Image (cartoon, rainbow, N blue to C red; front, top):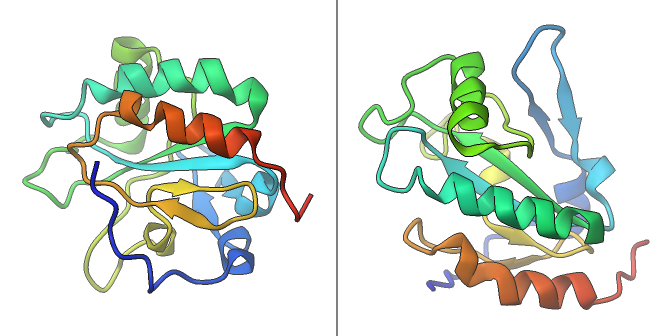
Length: 160
């Protein structure tokens, strides 16, 4: 597992002020204020890359730990060799049909450059208090995060 330098991370209150546009009609939005008190796993995803199989284990983590306070949010991105070419609706359908994904997927967004989604300042694992606890390489298998997630789920939150 690769833990990257986290000195650029903003305070927890900034995390809870973020929002994510969700696919579908009606301009649906995920308000991060609603994530207060949860452990949040933010994942950059692509349905046509070597890491696509990770969706299956992410869904396993979601089913196992969401009742305990884990929230997984997938952020599809097409900036790396066209590995996420479909529409937001096509991506959601692919993830549901092929990997049984039930955790929320945001609309496609950029993770690099001038249009980077602000959520990516917080990629990858956030505590119940909105503090970044780890940032991992794409090669990190979701199952290798299970021990860290369990530890964070067991920690009390001072902001509840």
